[in-house]
Length: 84
Image (tube, rainbow, N blue to C red; front, top):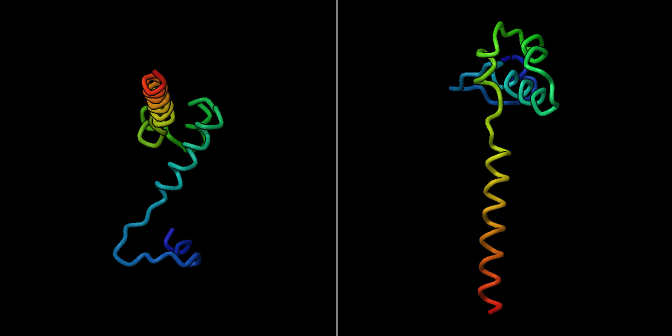
């Protein structure tokens, strides 16, 4: 991993560099693509679904969608009040 960082010009001074970031990116990409947990485990070489959990994306897209709907609803209510 350090060799890759050096080749790409990433400064590794006083930094802990590991492949977990790459693993996390891969697993989140597979998750976004809709692959099953079994296939994600096979690719990441995890032995259990529980081992995948720290790498999987949270429900951020779902949370963002809920917040957007809340903001839209707030603006609709606000614009109706202004029109009266």
